Image (cartoon, rainbow, N blue to C red):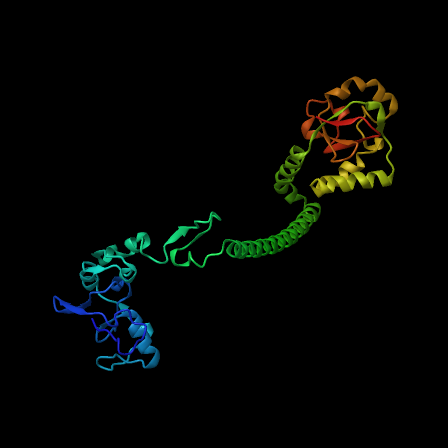
Length: 326
């Protein structure tokens, strides 16, 4: 093992005594040679990793025989050398700070993390601010200053996360728009090609069922307040609420059309039939149109009703008052 202390001011072996073990020079010093020793591939000369890299930054030749070597050519030393180095008993690198421990090189990393003389060992602030700081920074530690720095860092992180969230929301909106365009395309394709309708119908039904299950169950307390002939403005208001609630576009139009008595089933189509069948109203399973005095009566929820009291895919009933959440 060669050391280039003469060429590197940062070499950890500088001014350290060397001793020979089984014919190989090894350092009696607290450095992790096991991980950082390097060798040239052709001549196989081994060097301190930090030293050889600094040497190669100036001239790309082997310091021993001057053969061509680049940083990319360097390889770890053989396992036998690593095993030999790991068995060396060396002083802790915190010896200058009072540590007298002598231990095997392979045990050094674990010892350094727990060494009480390690100037970089994390310790809690003794003034009660709760911060964990390196031991050598305890004297210069200022609770107010360091807490302010930490708060500023957290605010920066929060700002970055908010920016990322906004970008993700924008991407999600664009993806939803693309999905909606795709659904419209598929719907147009089904209309032009009836053969595809059978394949796509289950997916559309699942979408409707998921939307219906998300609505709040409702109870109508005053059926007499039913508006059977809503005008275009009222229908537009209800349609907007349906869309905002996530109603699948495939059924929005049908539900709004079915909000007028002219599209209602035979049992509801006239005032006379409604009065005659009023005793069956309580059997309806109704879901609240969000924030509106209106309910949807979906066919998938009311399969127990007779055919003259329900219509596909469902109908909207609008009231002047009397709609409550269950």
